[in-house]
Image (tube, rainbow over all chains, first blue to last red; front, side):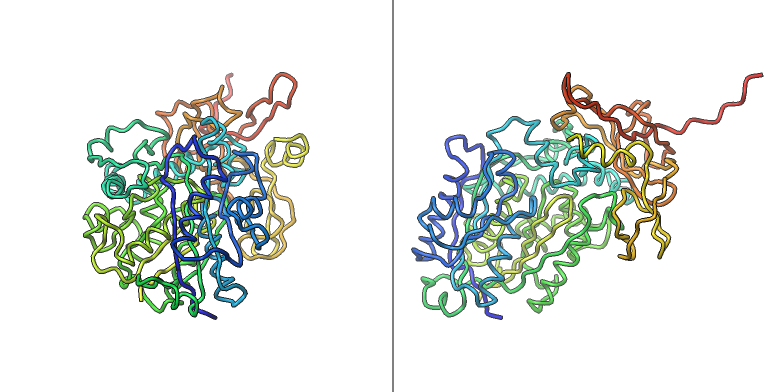
Length: 386
Length: 137
């Protein structure tokens, strides 16, 4: 297997991008990524996207985007794994380069969620869940997460307020990210007074509906050595995906993210590290409850203790396990199929020391984890700076 | 939900028909033909009693398309007595009275309707278990 490097990246601001279409957003991320990597051509393009068919009426994004960015002719495929689509596409790119099939691959994540009205977007997001036995009963995606959160609070005797530190941290970090959707800090009081969406999930527990695109260029070792213009090479040292049942009611234990455990353990093993070696963790805080469950299933906290890490300040940029260092899904925004690629771009910036005011001190190793649905697909990547 | 899909799943939604694994004997709902516990074939039909307890719950205020006129409505994960868990709406209860661990039982209720000329869909919902009443003499 060959070593795979991130040779360049690009991203659009996250937000309500009514002036740009799905294909334009993809363009706005891919062109800077290609320029950053110093390439005019690639062997393949993998596009992570969840909802283009449902919300834009457009499928077949591989060929569409390839043509639109001037790459007509190359291999190009859309990869879908709900909100985990971005990381799933990255993993396909990784496999292609590591396996010696391609030398230069572009991975883009793109999502357009704000052209439609809220109830249609809500119904579309519920497709990440089991359509016949969860969504069909009128249970929205946020409702599924609300039930997980309430159960967690019940079993571990955790007050709702304890989750607020995840939201406070995410907003604080978004201030320093020019591409974040919500660049303003919030206090714990703001969190506590936020309007309830689906009890116990309030507005500040929840990531926003938004548009965005991010892209990375992957290269095999022999190419990146000769092209990287003085910046620190970032190697993908671990890449793994795990699955669980789509429906929460089919899980062996609804409060345990089995797919996070599977994929993070495989990635640690591949990279030859343990959780103690990880300098920062870009986790999938679509809801604050998912941040807590991810910390636990990825080896950073005992069960029921994920929230305590946040309460004790361990998840901030100065903490032991910094998370959501550029705002996370909560405050950078969560354009679902693009999120996994945003996370990789941000982690690469951290490893290269280019995260500006949000720079975590002495980053060598970053864990990046993207979740599809309420935990059915979880993809973990480990980036190491060389 | 399309006509064919509704018809295919009618026995699950009207009478909680699942399966029982002949190898590890676990009850399975909804039916899936391969046992999720032991990965052996599981195609023996088994109707669940519809009795269970609330594992967790919430109330949907911002419903997906098709459920607007019913909001707000309570939903729950219900742990059935035979083992499987099911995601469903709660009925005949005010949200303030719902709690984790509360005993519930399945009833058949209208789920939604697809316009004036479309399907009227029915499904399982769960209500607080009714206490047996003494016969009036």
